[in-house]
Image (cartoon, rainbow over all chains, first blue to last red; front, side):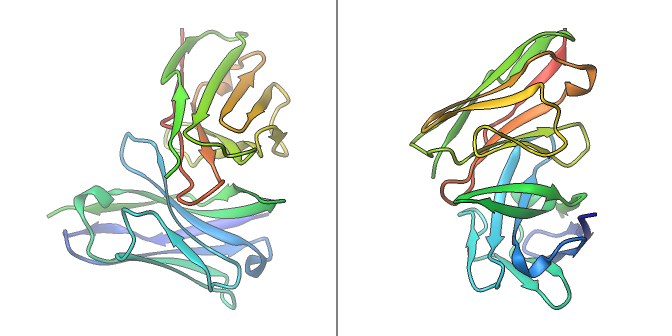
Length: 121
Length: 107
């Protein structure tokens, strides 16, 4: 059974840093793309970042570029999102998501339970 | 960035209704279009990938169609468990933008 178990998150002051993590099991983690998607309270889904299976190709939404860093440890089957210079508008539930490719089409078939990050003084 | 416009934002429907939700991309995305269902307080669930492919375990009353810029999600006969919010997402180019969502409400 595929599982994505998230940890981290919580309350942080504006300008602060936080790390959210995701432990993967039930599939061959080093073979798959991984993503982060977030959802502000009462709002829609927003794609944040992705990383390729080898960990050497990453992509970010403009809103987080230069502040957030996605990384993975294929030996430990873990995915991380390091968030720096946090702003109030980064307040959201963050989802760890597996990416699958069929041909050239990427889609997200398994989602973690979500981790709430609140940026407030 | 590619903008995804979903309509309608909300829909008041009854059990047994046929429901159609549309999604329009601001530029061609071929068939790089996915649909998700999200119930309140829960993570999204993949319904359709690559515009028309039903994800395993998803009931056959869900179907997707379209290509290039215009796409539809159809629920042939709405069931009580289908009251949720539905999102389209393009995966043609990053950032992988989502539509703003369509909320199905009980009439």
